[in-house]
Image 1 (cartoon, rainbow over the protein chains, first blue to last red):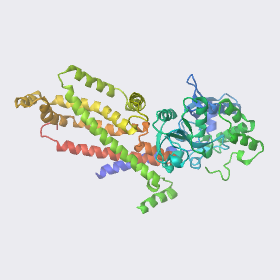
Image 2 (cartoon, rainbow over the protein chains, first blue to last red):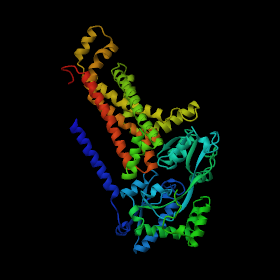
Image 3 (tube, helix red, strand yellow):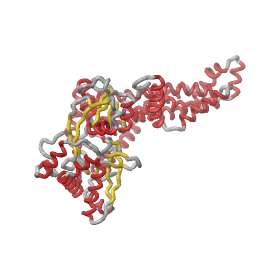
Length: 297
Length: 245
């Protein structure tokens, strides 16, 4: 018996030790590695139209993919040679782990810039987009406010921070799936009366497929407007890779590229982007590569 | 209890080990519910799969060829497809078809219901083959002796073949039931709030992947350990000197 306990103890220590090594290792100078191998490995989404989605040929495209292409172009100019892009499709529940493990160098994957996340990955500044959270509900659901979601079955996506904050704490029964397509199917099949998600994801659905979503509308006020950030590993945020990404995002804001892309992909114009362009061109400190005071989402 | 909860809060503040499942009421409640769902789902699926196994092995000895073929078809269908695919198939395809045929809105069964169906049938298919192996290991002379005593076919199966077969197939059955308990984790794909599902929710909210991975690991080791202990006890209590040991 004691021998067995000892064995279990040793293997537990080994597991913990291994995990500690993999999480605490620093990857100084990822940009150097990228230049050396001539390839940027980046985490992208394929389930979040039109930021990251598959087109008719199965290729991953979208607004964030265009941003990544532009960033690779900038890196190529810096390196003096072509830097290729290798895309790794991530989902909300694994993007930060992939980055920590070194599977990817960075990601632009519709991630909200949340305080807790900044402790895990290096979210570079400034942010590049902003969205809030709402419930898309069936017209017969009886949902008209955040109070009325209580006791109702609400579908969601695994790994979203607001499942707890705006779902559980409002008393909803959250049924969370791994991918967006499963959630969509479950919502349309009537397995839940509403869908708790980013409002930015609902708008293109209503615009692009009005017939399919005719019984659904955004039924709660949009809350928790949180900007989206691109991320590198913690150690890289103040290293060349993080700096280069910051520079690129600042340039995108200033030139209005993000607004152009928003337009190109049929996303309704957000005032946040327009304001950021103004602020960046005016040299506002929100547009530098540091976290600003009062920025705790 | 509060002292214990406070200890874990202190552990986070000073050591950075964040076990919210101990000091956050919301997380604790959903995690306990997750473990309970795993246990519940396992027990129900084990019981139903055993019934399927016993009944299937009996039907396989039937004289009617079409009956044997049906059982054979069932085994092939469930043994040759991965449990995750079955879950998706039942939850999204079968349920949608049934709903539209029966005119039900919101699904015939929920995720838990389909997980029970799919996992029981999956493990049941293996159990049929395991029991068949046991049944075939019972000497023909023993069966003939029982028939000579006036037992009919069902009685021979119930009182002679099955009890002996059990002893032969218990080790293989152990394996399959342990596998079944571990396979309940795939139910999180269709949002059944079992242990992995809630752990995933919690680590997404609290960013404590490492801690929760260790907790989940310990939980499954304990659950499987308990099942193994139970099955060994059963094996011992069924022991017949000179047979199957």
